[in-house]
Length: 246
Ligand code: SF4
Ligand code: FES
Image 1: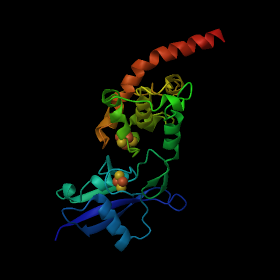
Image 2: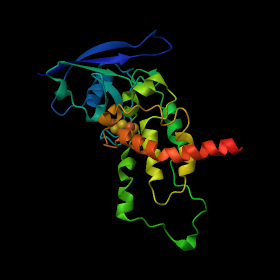
Image 3: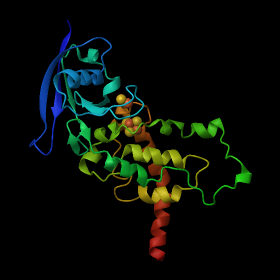
Image 4: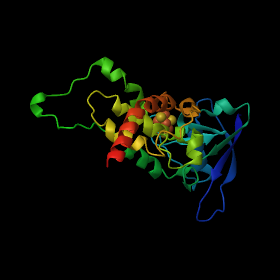
């Protein structure tokens, strides 16, 4: 019989002074994910354990956790890969406020996503008579990689600047802005660069690059931020000129 120890972070802010680890010894099988292990623990051993999940297949982005120190999706991380170590420690994405156990408050992240106007902006609405705005495969390829983001927040957990400054716009929101800036149907760059050129916009990034390493969808948010920095300078200069004229 294969057994492994799973240490799970528990925390109820109203009761607990600080997070603590609860240990469970469970039997595991070769196809058991860390999410499956948590489900077993919740069903059989600790019904009050709180964690998020939905799709079980790396699509919804809700099962982000810190697993043996690394930001990972619990549904695509397998217990068998930790068999030799004999222990798995599971914690919350604690660069966000913890609500209960492994559940964190995603509101700050959602505000950052919304702040970059993540939708196609047109100066003039397109008339129906003009029909659809066609896009070639080559035009789509310019930004497709950035559409793969599942909002799992792993890149924020990985980012040292988020740890220093919770207001930092951060990796996924910048990659999302870049996605729309590169879309040939969009005319909203000026609005997005105004946000990204703010003090807590893109500039705190020091290009550590760990955000891209942990990203389960190969979005490469670190690369997006560097491209955005290069493109942002003229928008920043223009904004300074307008301030001086005002
Ligand atoms: S960029 Fe990658 S790590 Fe960051 S939220 Fe999107 S999918 Fe997750
Ligand atoms: S449960 Fe949906 S990404 Fe893991």
